Length: 245
Image (tube, rainbow, N blue to C red):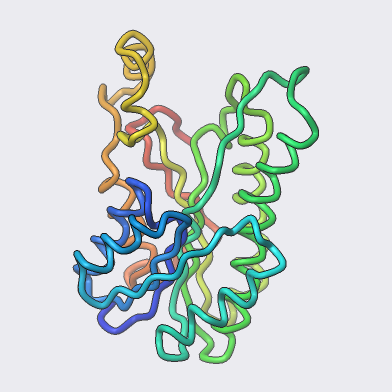
């Protein structure tokens, strides 16, 4: 897939393991990338490692500044926006009866509300050229539920339904809005799991392994490319068969 040459794409949550792989794949395909995250040292590493990378430190929890962030990011990319990958998100786990309103609202606001606002303001820019790609990263647990994650699963399920609605609204404008739903992927977070728990997870995966960040990045690359031009409002499941829709 080389049709991303000179395409301007924003990637949020770029400083994590999956974000890193997404940056690498888009860079290899020739895209001009604006990488965003909260860890400036990680963003500097990306900028030094890859060509055609611009970086901008931003915390998506600052919902009142998201439109300004989109404006600044697009200017950094030369004034046009071809795609955005909404990869940033958080967890704050607790059993439901112990979960505070603050824990609920924080995860919903960052994962769902901020993703909506990022998509909304990206769409406004894409309407000018009547084309664009939006890829929202969700999670397998947004389909299955998960112990201690009522807030997180609700936010991820909400992203899926929201993306379908946005896809219906803007498909005629040649804007494709899709989701990728990762299963359990090898990241710094899963590296901290003890072996027994990790084995229990793998036992539920038909492919008998955790996914690699590149598995998600390859799906992002496809959905950002012209090869996915007739796919809209869909969720691409990347979970080794753990969940089959």
